[in-house]
Image 1: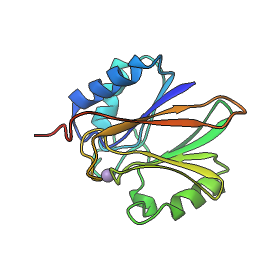
Image 2: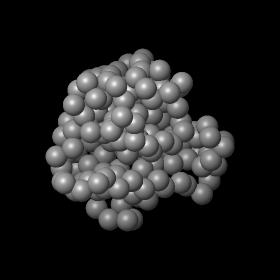
Image 3: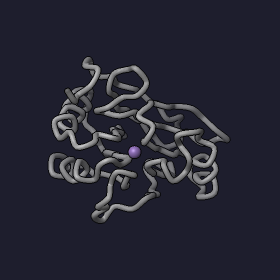
Image 4: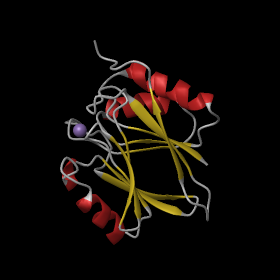
Length: 169
Ligand SMILES: [Mn+2]
């Protein structure tokens, strides 16, 4: 299945739309993940797509609505944990994220918050961050990820970057 991962859209509904259209160009999207900041964007995403949306609240989500700090679910036989990252020291490293995911018996942990894309294995856990779809901090362009999951196969990750540097200003 083809999963679109985005994070830190920070109130840019236009950019939520851009991610949906770019992600959908490459094929059907079977599920969506948004790692927080901000949950109103997630609610907008939910209005626009008809496949499942998995999402959490971020540190800028002062009104969390019904969103939790962490979510754990399984897709294609992979147990996935999603969280914004600020509660696990993601600004500094991914050690706490990987160990929390391991403790929960997860295969994959997805986070945001840093606005910097990340894709590496740590202690047997696939650690992913799609970067920010609106406000990148790595001197790169705004980004999102496509995660291809097929039961029993190694996950495939594609990072997509937009042409514009920023979608604010
Ligand atoms: Mn954040």
